[in-house]
Image (cartoon, rainbow, N blue to C red; front, top):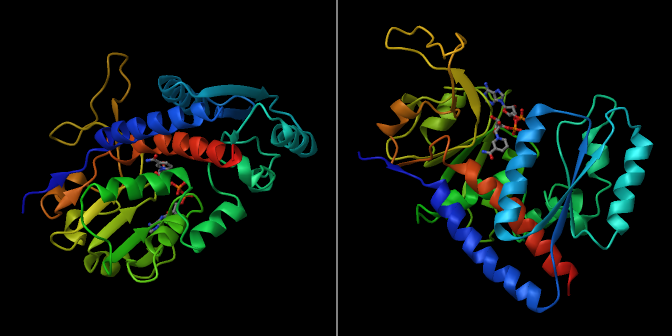
Length: 302
Ligand code: NAD
């Protein structure tokens, strides 16, 4: 079976065009979305994310302000900062960059962000809307995976869907999104670290979404012929030569590459559709952050 590759860059570009129209409509109503990103302490990984967010937001002309706070900030002081941003009319959205320093419980702080400014759509009210089938906002990675799936044109109604990974930002909201409609929903099964027989679940799935963070967790041989596979995982692994030895870069260090959780080479032989890593869900995720920012601003703007 010829496997078709899903194109996250293409879908991301299409949604950006839709957002440009929504932004023009908001501008006509005098509404200007403005995201404030809160970074606590210094962290190389979150700086990479912040740079990619800044680039994407400036491309669409959405205001993005970075607020950096000291790494030794107390929980109470951080809560006060968030509450001040909740009340500050300059900002229509707030994102708390991860990771936070050890003394801070991320969930507690995220819960302090006003649901009206919660661009990651992860606090209880916004997550609760998913339970009610309202997908206007959704946690960015889960929403991105759904957007990429939709490009297959395959209706989800009744399909056996296996979601591997049950985190609060991906697997759990994805399962709720799959159950969005009273009569048109898929039939999701959510697998995780304690699942007894992952392979048995995978083998009968029409569609799999994998969000774990383990390269090669899913092999083509684990999948049902013709399955649609959406790979959400992001892993850095050493590049190997044909004998299995690590390839070194010009500095003599192992050359690294980015791969997903699904072994793409074997999956391509079995799947009808496969999402690549990189170039699949990843490029759409930051666009979902922009979409949530635009939609929340629109709701607040009346
Ligand atoms: P997480 O660590 O919060 O959750 C991992 C999940 O995998 C858990 O539910 C755990 O039970 C499950 N798991 C672990 N080992 C397993 C196993 N052997 N079998 C079955 N399930 C197992 O991770 P997360 O934050 O949800 O991220 C998951 C992956 O998605 C990571 O690779 C992350 O980098 C990636 N990610 C991608 C994007 C994107 O835009 N593409 C965004 C966010 C996260």
